[in-house]
Amino acid sequence: MKEKEFISIIKSTLNSQYIGDDCAYLKDLGIVITQDNLVEDIHFTRKTITPFQLGYKSIMVNLSDVASSGAEPAYLTVSLSLPQDIDKNFIKEFYDGCKNACGKDVEIVGGDITGADKIFISVCAIGKSLNRNISSRKNAKVGQKIIVSGNHGSSAAGLAILNNQIECFDKERFIKAHLMPKAQIEFGQKVSIMVQTPYAMMDTSDGLMDALLTIAKESGVCMEVDFGKIPHEKGLEQFENWQDMILFGGEDYQLLACVPKDFEYGLTVGKVKNGFGVDLILNSKTVNYTEKNIENKLFNHF
Image (cartoon, rainbow, N blue to C red):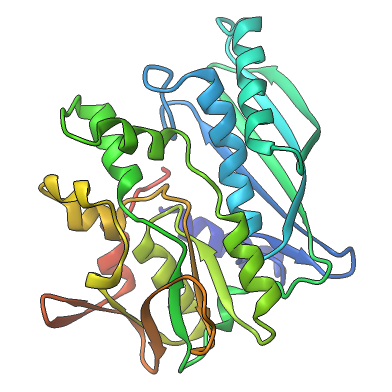
C-alpha cells in the first residue's frame, strides 16, 4: 500500500476538512501548520550527508510546505529519535544546520529527544496567515496558467551522483541541490499577497508530475504542461534519463501554482483546462498521464 492510499484512509476515517494540502489552514487561529518526518535509510543516509546538512534540510522541507500555503513561516519544533552512537558533536552540528536554515525570521521553540535504532527526525512548522490569501489544491480553475518557481531535476541528479558515484560536470551543484535545497518562501509570499482570487499551489517535493496530478485530481481539471518550458539546469541533459529526472525526480522543493493569466510572476509552463489528469506536450506530441502512469514512476516512501 502506498503513501497516498494511507492518507486517503486517514482522511476518510477522521473526516477532517483540514487534511489534504501541504499545510492545514486553521483560519480561526490565523495560522497554518505542517509536520514532516525524515527517516534514516529512507530519506537520507549518514554516508552521504553531514549533520549540518541534515539539520538544514530537515528545516527547509518544512519551510517549503509553509511557503506552498502562501503563509509566512514563523515557528518550528524539532523532535529527534537517536541511536546510541550519536554524540554531542552530531547534535551541535545538526542544530547549527537547523539555525542556518531558519535565518533571522524563523525560530525553533521546542521539541523532544528519545532513543531509537536509527535517526528519526520530526519537524512541525507554523506559519502566519495574516494578510495572506492561503492556497488550496482544490482551487485550480479552467483558464488559469501554471507557473513554477525554478529548476526541476537537479536534486534527482544529485541523488544519482551520490548513490552511483557518477562523475560529471556540475557535480557539486547537483549534490548541493539535493542535500541543501532552498524553500521558495519569497515566491509563495508574492503569490499569496498579489493574487486576490482562489488559487492552487503546492511544492514539488515528491516530483513535478506528482504536484500536477495532485492539483488536477483535487480540483477536477486537466493540467496541460509544455515540457520545453520547464526550467532545468542545462547540465542535466548529460544524464541518460534526464527527462524523467525533471518530471518525476523529487526533492527540488520548488513551488507550482495555478494563477490568473494576467498574473506576472514566476515561469509559465502550461495552463489549466477541462479534462482529467496531466497532458504533457513533448516533441510536438501530447500524452495524457493518469494517476497510475505517474505513481509508478514516483518515489515511494514505503
